[in-house]
Image 1 (spheres, rainbow, N blue to C red):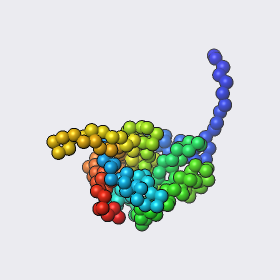
Image 2: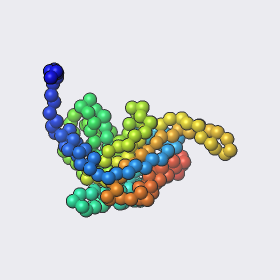
Image 3: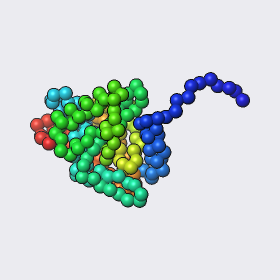
Image 4: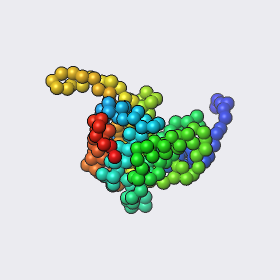
Length: 224
């Protein structure tokens, strides 16, 4: 048998926990829903606050959709569904040490600026390797955005015991039919993965439609 030379790196800490949860995730019966979202207004809104970005607009829209469809803000464990009042959104962050999913806690009581400030803090801690267990614990829903890495669309794996995760692809200029003619729109594909044991397709569709509706709000319409 051919002898190979290499170095073994045992999983530990956050990576070890994530690995165990991924095994659990593959055991869940999931379904996927996708929708193309016009990002034109979100791109403008994301620059209007102090340090706000499109990611913060997406976080706010997701928060609003979870308020509208609270069944999505839940955990499935031990053959039971627990729907939470607190909305804690995990945000997948790429770091040199690998993928981290810190949590923005209590988004249900935060303004867009508050969400932006919290997002900047946890991203900085993720990339500096200073996340603690409190920073990664308690998520009720997760967002994974690979658009900045050039990925057009993808299906994300749920993070048990959460029942849903939102995957976001890159924003691209695409031709669309408008007013009997053609126009160019900045679009991104949003794909929702749901645990079918805890939520049905109709609820998932309403949730994803609400996110699209909130992100596509015209400039001048209040978002909060």
